[in-house]
Image 1 (cartoon, helix red, strand yellow):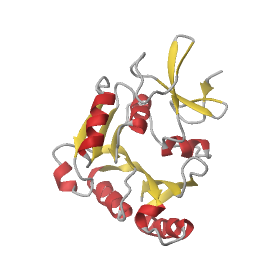
Image 2 (cartoon, one colour):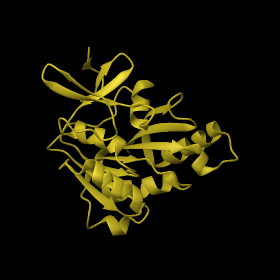
Image 3 (cartoon, rainbow, N blue to C red):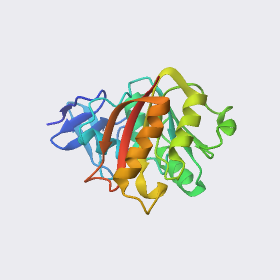
Image 4 (cartoon, rainbow, N blue to C red):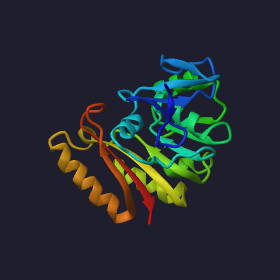
Length: 220
């Protein structure tokens, strides 16, 4: 039985998560579609989505709401983007940014029926190139496997996040330094973030994602 979870616009049945399908009858990544009480739900795979992993690992609030405008940095082929699209709904909007042409092509193909997503082929580190394409947003979500992940996040927060907005970042330890223990990297990332932001939540993502952690932050 699918019921509301503790997270707004996210539903749960045991350890399975779901969002209400914004485009009924259409899948994005071969996920399971389930109809209940005339509502179609899409199963949200925590092994393929760091945001879903964080929810199942205890995050009490991801600060994404219906009607929010979201800047998604590192959109890849659109798995998590599609569920964020479900959460913000038809009156919300997602700017989906990725630097790789191949995955951007896949995202456009996978999400072409969703009218609340704008695919943007650009380097998230080059914020000046994004100025004419992106508005001020309620939430920034970042999933970028680069050494300077924190610096990229801070640049985008300063440029695009509203004063009382939230920033969500998935940190991949091996992309920052393959020689260090992930726990040490996560500690160093926390120290950098705390200089600029208030950390609202922190989770490691095992067993769903290896050597990853997850921060939810708020502007000071």
